[in-house]
Image (cartoon, rainbow, N blue to C red; front, side):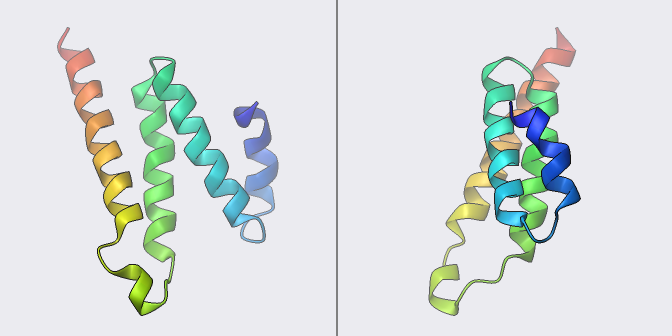
Length: 87
């Protein structure tokens, strides 16, 4: 379902960037759960790029929890990808 929505949301960017980001996140989760860490990584990296462009009020940006979560997810997916290639 998310994969089907993606082209339409991408065409509406940047007006629907929040919807697009939610779709990337959900699609990455679904792909990872279904055993495709390589494709999930594509969407996590897109989400990281979008998060880098997000401007928060100074108090909300302390510690950057969203970015830290996304980077940890990316690192885990990269590890899974490397592990699969070694098999």
